[in-house]
Image 1 (cartoon, rainbow, N blue to C red):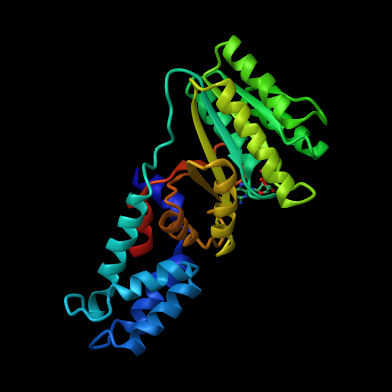
Image 2 (spheres, rainbow, N blue to C red):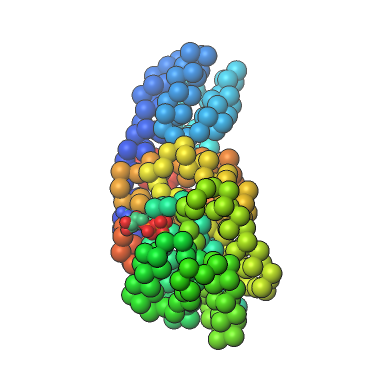
Length: 299
Ligand SMILES: Nc1nc2c(ncn2[C@@H]2O[C@H](COP(=O)(O)OP(=O)(O)O)[C@@H](O)[C@H]2O)c(=O)[nH]1
Ligand SMILES: [Mg+2]
């Protein structure tokens, strides 16, 4: 378990420095949380991509109180961050014995199609029957890419080049129900001519899933690139308004990630992170765990 966790979060050093190290350096040796010290702390948290709302909340809690001293700022942040992640919900991906539908959304390049390949592989390794629906019919290359992933993972695929994505998903659900699949993974486009069209298309697919498979377990996952700063928060807002997200998958945590977005999304959107991508290969998928993430930030 420990090795696994090291492997998962060993690229959080920059994030840890920005979120924790810099704050401790800025305020740790002060006598009191004066307005001047608190302003400094707020600026530091904002530049670590924590989001303005969250940063000011953390700082306002400290104003005019005498229980917590600047020397304890690290412990304070640790308990606040953990509370935020816990309040956002369960880290474990939902799964039941019937059909499980995972609807994968996110902007172009976030890592949706790769995540589908990884999830297909994970479920296949667990002996499940896995079907993939290609709901990104906008780019021809997208279907090719998904085809390659499905073959690699040993999963089946429904693709209808250039067809209406909602109709492809409709067909995939019928097949999944008829042939007794355990898992249906729905890939989607991340960019259409404009944001409005994309959101309308996603809503349409979501409504097909909800109407056609009300009995199925349905998770709606937003894929976020860990290198996305504050923009990730904006993405989460736009997508959740359209399709009511249930969780987040954080990809590219193997890079020099700005993982603070996890905290901002958990706090502002109440969305739990469930999955973590740590590379481009099929086996580079990990389950997110709040305690381990906090350990890595505060070690
Ligand atoms: N390093 C790294 N690269 C990733 C990860 N997930 C996806 N990628 C890469 O990000 C790029 C975009 O991924 P793709 O799945 O096509 O994104 P999509 O447009 O959202 O479907 C590809 O080059 C992937 O190999 C990850 O966890 N780590
Ligand atoms: Mg894609």
